[in-house]
Each structure stands twice: as structure tokens, then as C-alpha cells.
Length: 244
Image 1 (cartoon, one colour):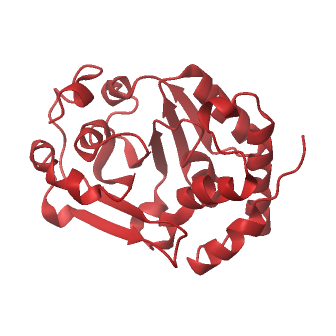
Image 2 (image 1 turned 90 degrees about the horizontal axis):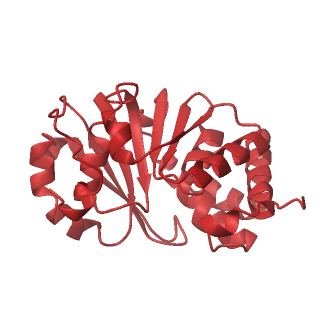
């Protein structure tokens, strides 16, 4: 396996954001990138093969919200829904060694890939789980247990609310990595927020753009304050087909 060094691209960007990692953590990120590019499965989870582009669009993007000094980064259990190729779960596992990261995906090959990558990087705080998101939300082992649930490139906000609130403990958080259409998605989410009792004071929007990042990225943070109705999440597919 050829060594890929992404730290030379990541370091100046993370320093600008005041996200400081140790040499060991940068070594782990380099090992992750190397293992990913060497794995035949990588081409089915990403179309990005250039190391610099990989460093920016996958690794930096996953780690960027850590620059906001928030209580949620002290979470003991973090669930990444729809982890795909392991973003943001794997970079977060490197940066947050005190947290247990549970990477969930409906594709068996994806969770197997993430498990291989975690092993290659020497990450012992990553657990994978193969299931549909709605099934995880109804599973007593996971329902209302997570301190933080994260979603990146998964779905619209009103759908993500139904996915994440059943998994988040009362007092915990959901964090959505969103693009430039966040305001539009928020306008469509009024009913979903009402169903899950998400009040305005428990919604926070954080934004990063050049020169802090090479691209624009919005983050939506929801704080959960009460238990969710038992009927949610609904049957598989309904959150997308008939969003709240």
C-alpha cells in the first residue's frame, strides 16, 4: 500500500480553524487516506481520488465543525447515520478518541469498508452497524441513547429530524452538515420541528466560508429536550416519501 500524506493539505486549514491534532492523530489520518485509496471498495463510496481534494472535501469537511467549542464534542456516544465511506465518522473518531463512534449504514459493504478502515488506522473507538435508519431508531439498544447524532450528505432537514430525534437522548444533540440551501430546508421543516417539540431556542445555525474554509458549509444543531412520540420513526421509506 503506497503511503498517502494528506496532512500537508489538512494542517494549515485545521490550524486556521484552531483545530489542533497531535502527530499521532495526523499519522492516523494519513493511514486512513492510504488505506481508503488502496481498497477496491473505495471507488463505490467516493469519486474523489486526488489526495488534496480528498483532504479538503472528505477529511477537512468532516472535522470542520470541531472548531466551534461546543458541549456536544464531549459526547460519549456519537452515531453517524448513513456513514457511507466513513465520513464524518472516521475523521471524528481520530479527533475525538474519548468518544465511541457508531457508524450506521443500510449497505453491508459500506459498514464492512468502514470497519476495515478503522482497523487500518488503529482506531479502537469505532463500531459499525448494518441496518436501515428507521430500524435503528426503533431498536431498544439505540433508541434515545446517543449523546450526539451526526448526518452528512444524507437528506433534507425535515427528514433528518425524524431520523435523528428517536436516537438522541433527552439533553443530547443532532448535528447536520448542510449546504447553501439550509435556509430553504428550514422553512420546510416547521411541522417536523413541531412534531418533535424542537423549539426555536434549541436550534442553532453555524456557518463557515472562505477564508476559514475553501468552501461554504452550514451546520444545523438541534438540542433535544423531551422524549419522542412512540410512533416515530415511521416505517422504512416514509420519512422520505411523505416528509413531515
